[in-house]
Image 1 (cartoon, rainbow, N blue to C red):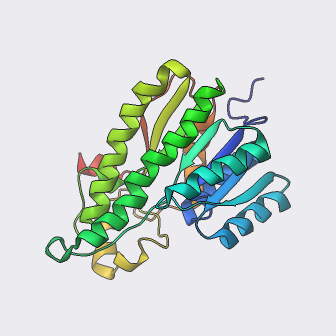
Image 2 (tube, rainbow, N blue to C red):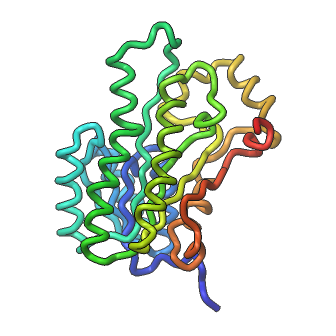
Length: 256
């Protein structure tokens, strides 16, 4: 029987693979047989994730890359190509958040969040997709969006705007890359407590989130693995592109 989710022989590049959500997804790829490049701006934590994957019997290596500093993305691509020869899967998982009220927002904070969440994603994809096309290597690009991408949520204006941009970019590139056999999809997580959003989760905020989440709980990072593996697999999702998989405990069903 064919294993639709087998990633054996594939190389996955996980930007933000050292984050709470990104590391869970990267480990999921490795569990299905993929070789995984963990890329992050904190090289030490990236190495820790890579070592955890290897300790579990997988194949991984850590690389430095800060999507807000595009020269480091190009250097990471060169190093990963030398390590693995190329890649089949790109995960764009870095994220930055802020709870600054709209009228207190500064151009500096706007640029900082946008440079990671949207600009960084666009130009990271440009570098890595170009090489996939040059090598005639079809595959999968997975962008991490957010339930706040639409409808927008209060207190996270810039973050919500950046994630709405991620949705638009995902659908545009799905059309752009389809002739090359590269599928571009997104995951829309609900509320998963992680480093970037803990500071905005006060008691009032948590109560409001639970009121709109039918499953009445936060998600666990490992619960993103299934959606990511599905989208990464050219067997399970071979005719799926420009699509968003929601992993949100029903939140979307309450806000449409």
